[in-house]
Image 1 (tube, rainbow, N blue to C red):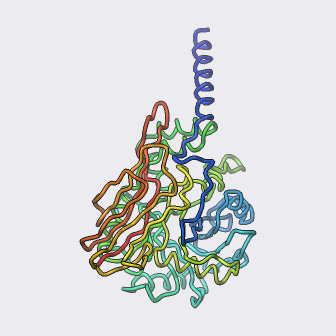
Image 2: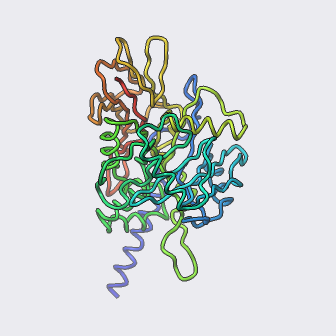
Length: 401
């Protein structure tokens, strides 16, 4: 009888706590604010590294596309695993959503996302594709190449990067929710179980309390950028595939929820015009040049954020390489003032250089180096987590020679 009383009390306590969580919002900006493009630029939000049931995913491409449209994405990139032939039938506009079909290949202990350019010839089979990629990865400079190569999930096989970083790589997944969830499981299985218990009441809370800074990824990123240009990405790694149960598959987290966690925000000076071929090349060019930032969207929509270097009357976006001259200024503006504690951090060669507690930064660059910006916020997650510092926005670097 006493056991039943204790069990009933625990269940009621859990339900009351769940009701408390269900009413909480963890966004750091007001949700009723309309998000506008930064003055002079267009901000296009998209998700990369998505798998359908053509490879490792659990749903048909059309279901995934519909999920992306519900979330309000501007572009969606499928990176199916070890399929040498691109699924060209998926390419095109689905309403306002631009859909691109690209590839992912396993190469030794590394996973490489391959975005084919206009002049690329598709390999005839998987063996040819791997030989083709091996050749591209060994090239000392990829700037003149149409294709784009990104290292996905860089610490899939351990906490350290072994060997030299490939010289032909254009990008590195810095923010990968699947990688971070695996790290959280290793750090504390009980903590992960508690988040799963809380998930039905507030999915955002369940993810945010587990989120840990991608320290290994940012360290590797900063180290590589001292030798070669490599741009950071947020990779959804979305499969909606959990442990199979009998003949059924638990689709967790859903594609829709995966698309709400992180995204890449491409900045362009001209608006996409609805022509798929032209707009695809515009997006690929921006990704190739690093003209984008990526964010933890669970904390709020960062649309309207801007970071650039001003050189007299000229503006240079993220990914730019400039010669050090007098009067270079690094400028950054938030789309809105966060409701919680926040800071804008300027990092030089991976080290914290300046911290600003206001929504706009105007910093004079006086020394060569690799500069990037991180916007950090400290939302109150409630009992038992309290306040937690999280990086909301990551910019791609500026290279000052």
